[in-house]
Image (cartoon, rainbow, N blue to C red; front, side, top):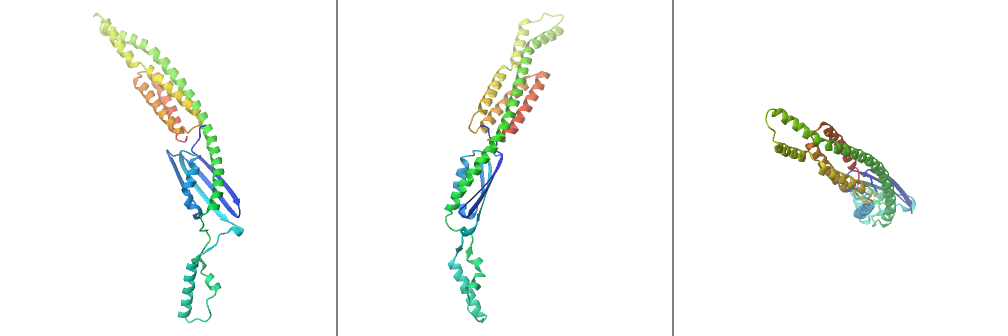
Length: 291
């Protein structure tokens, strides 16, 4: 199935007092490039997260943003006792230095809680990661659907353009078959004008005609073009990632039509070659978005 590299999806899940949301954006890229923005709780799981993404996507620039919110009893709360003790000793020392009455109480200490407490859990984040796995798979499935839907539209465009270039190739071949006898007769007329009173060397004329026919012959290029078009169509039905293979086939098609254009000394064929190349360019632009 043809898939686009462009897509967006969003997923959200809540369990056991943890709310996790994910956004994934995918755009064109020659290779697979994954960028993540993760909460500190699960940042150490980045490689595992990338491995999950690779199961769904083989090419493209992927941006993933994950956010975790805690509610109710699930709100993580961690006290760094060593830091709290340091703050307490500093307050006691300040009280003595300023000769203030009273003792340093817990309420006084809590006013400086930002120095010894933190809201993010310093555990290994296993519970959060399990939830993220479930949410990430949901988001990737939705992204895959969107990329497949857009890929289907690209497939329709490819088929239409392949139909157009096949029709153009038919016309090019038809013109080419008529050119050799026309060129032969044109050459005879030119020679006759040059040697009106002299005897014409028929053998030399035949040699020139053979050389001309060989130079004008584009049958091999047309055969290879048809072969490339056939393989291109066959690969469009392939369920694997085909973007790079199609790009190679398109390069080969462009090379053959350029050769035909260089051989053609005919206005009609030259015009068809230009139109042919325009269609190939539009296919190339679309291919940049195919996985």
